[in-house]
Length: 98
Image (cartoon, rainbow, N blue to C red):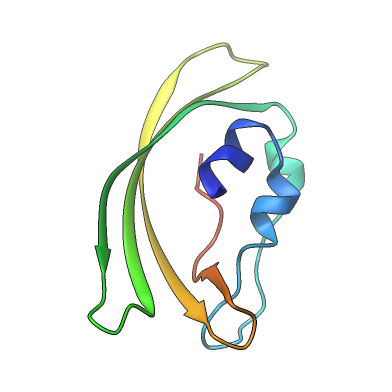
């Protein structure tokens, strides 16, 4: 779902999936994403903890900024954790640094 949100330019919804385990505030400036277009989001690996309450995802993201029209690819290591009370997975990090 997270990758789909990035591809469809739903950055606010993707940012809503951020929730730090230490409860620190999230630092997201969506203005930086105004002219960003994610072309491809591919999960390269997933490592789930034994208790199935956390996971590390390595994703490859291909993108460009509309003002520059130059295609770039980055790797994004993501730490996810499961909050039982909310019955949801959350990203313990930030949106990718494009």
